[in-house]
Amino acid sequence: MKVTKAVIPAAGLGTRVLPASKAIPKEMLPIVDKPAIQYIVEEAVNSGITDILIITNRNKGAIEDHFDYAPELEERLAAGGEGKRDILESVRACARMANITFIRQKETKGLGHAVLQAKSFAGGEPIAVLYGDDVIIGEDPAIGQLCRAYEKYGKGVVGIKEVTREAITKYCSLKVDRMEDRVFSVTDMVEKPSPDRIMSLYSILGRCVLPPEIFGILEHTAPGAGNEIQLTDAMRELAVSDGMVGVDYTGTRYDMGNKLGILQATCEVALNHPEVGEGFRKYLKELAATL
Ligand code: UTP
Image 1 (cartoon, rainbow, N blue to C red):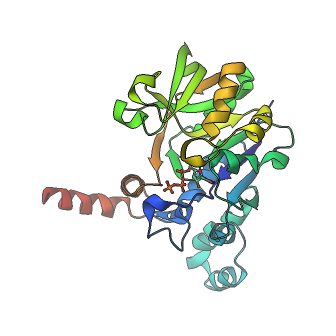
Image 2 (image 1 turned 90 degrees about the vertical axis):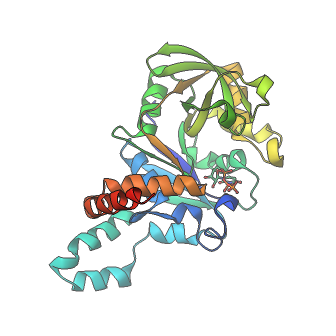
């Protein structure tokens, strides 16, 4: 079945990037000239997703405003003539990218709980999940690679990457068997494993495509690590009962939930930016020479 719906959980508290995220949602922090969440929406749209649900909370109204029309601003830009046309188009495009709707997660009870808010939106169809603080940049959009695997294998798909032994204890560890190039069967997983429980250095990073059964599982998933309803705990049940597929997606992932990730994304996107790329490269070389 073709995957056309996606959910972007963006209701976390963003404590790792405080105080920047105190009044501005961390998903709205810019990477050069677009907020992080716009890159994620564009990735979904470029993968054939038509309907997107963004999970927000009561402090994240700026995300809704960003994907809405801005009549006053647009009028002013339109009056600016040819010189402002490109800016006007880029501002209008935000409101036209896809059918974007919003639901508030009224209590911050974890990623699993956030995804559960998408149950009626999914309406019995599979759903792509793009974590709101993971920006992935690459030629072939990451979630599209996962959707193709879902359509091929008919099983839940997780986006995976190999990480270091130190890092895996902060993420989750998967039991994997290679099926084809960059594609694995996943039959078990453990969240934040102690060193003796590490199954492999493959972890789920930022993306998955889930079958409708996930919602029934989430409804009975008890709070786990951090007293939150963990999506990994629900996916583990799915992996053990039906098996899942892991796709080692191509593209570079930036963790916009931590300060270093934000800086890396900013530098790399800036270097390739048509307007500021050249000037930034020159600046960076001069700066590097002084380090
Ligand atoms: P994180 O755990 O990375 O986000 O959740 P966080 O809670 O904002 O981070 P810190 O640790 O406080 O800095 C991964 C994704 O799940 C969303 C987050 O917005 C992020 O995109 N999330 C998390 C929710 O939507 N709701 C939650 O209750 C928890």
